[in-house]
Length: 72
Image (cartoon, rainbow, N blue to C red):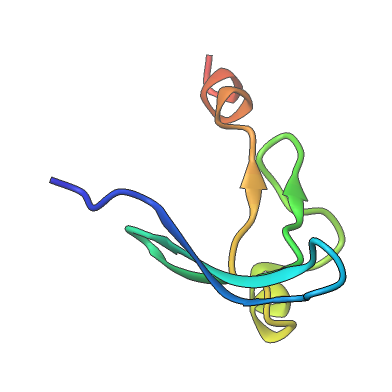
């Protein structure tokens, strides 16, 4: 059974709603706030996967419906 996704608050600002946290997923940990690029039509445009990793990107938002439809 996969572990559930959890979120830990690491630090809060006292004078605003800003916070720093850690999103824990079965695939790894994502420190927040973070840059989450969006893969349209199942690909990241303009920069290769190795470049995104070098920039410190921990995750990508992708539309799986488009991935599934691309093979129909």
